[in-house]
View 1 (spheres, rainbow, N blue to C red):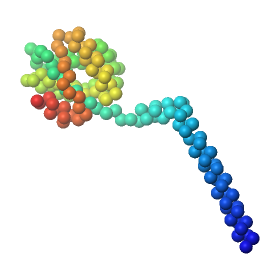
View 2 (tube, rainbow, N blue to C red; view 1 turned 90 degrees about the vertical axis):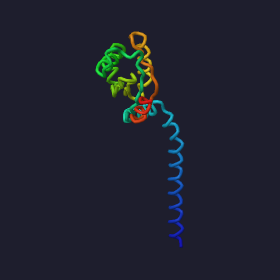
View 3 (tube, helix red, strand yellow; view 1 turned 90 degrees about the horizontal axis):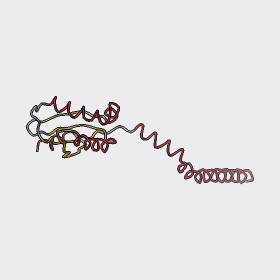
View 4 (cartoon, rainbow, N blue to C red; view 1 turned 180 degrees about the horizontal axis):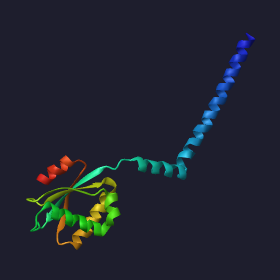
Length: 152
């Protein structure tokens, strides 16, 4: 009987010591999460591994140009944005000319979600510098929805 009580007391002491150790670790947990260095590292790693999501912008070209071809409109948009943003800006933005409908004068462009505001701001600058205006009609997350808006 003496051995059983000694074993029970030792087991109780071990569980108390481990419980106090867990409580100490738990108290330190909010401090490590609030530490700026670690949260900045966590946010940086989250941003790095986050997949860039694509956004499709439907634009209306006003007025419709005389040379109403897809290639002419693509060059007009791309050279204008390249003058404003530069080559690296266009690459970071994930800019792509998707399609152009000559009858309605509507076009669909693609950019990454993080650079959507940059694109719309540079589009405003492009409108003030160009003889054509590009009026944004819609922003969509899928190409199918953007095509639906462009066909209306």
